[in-house]
Image (cartoon, rainbow, N blue to C red):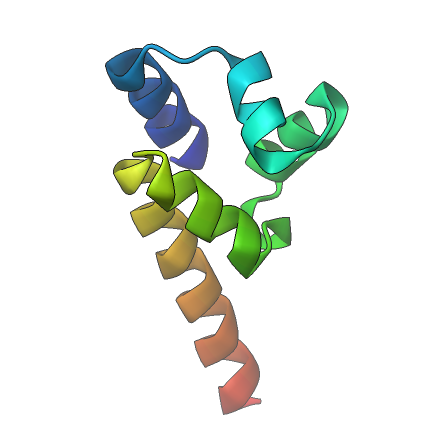
Length: 75
């Protein structure tokens, strides 16, 4: 789900993964890890992505974070 949104936004914006690494100031392995484990994205990284047009991806990431917080608050 997150991977699909990421790829769709990449295509729509005509960015490469290396461009995203530059935006987030991270390495390619770190970006791959973030995409595979989306709950590891930081708020700052989500803001940078949103500022660069990754709206679909950011919506998915925010929903994941919200769901995680909802689960934790019920325990």
